[in-house]
Image 1: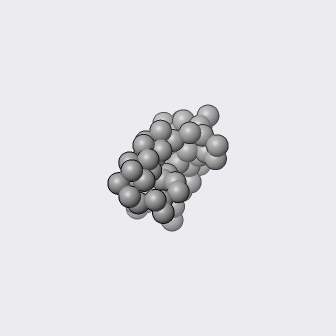
Image 2 (image 1 turned 90 degrees about the vertical axis):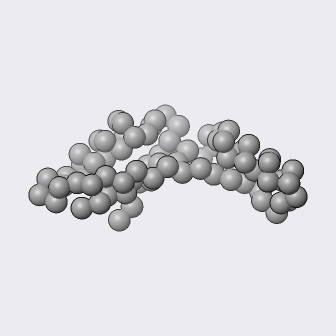
Length: 76
């Protein structure tokens, strides 16, 4: 079973990579771009017999994200 976990910055957290891309696009003439946000998607291949959503949540919270500045969700 493939499980996708999407990780993104929490609202209000500055995203330097997204901001740099936005400024570059604006300088190149793409003035309509107001913001760029970056997300990470992790795909875990989990043995169906051992799938436990709580354990996947622990992995997402403790290993794949920084809970101080990032939020995560399991995408089904």
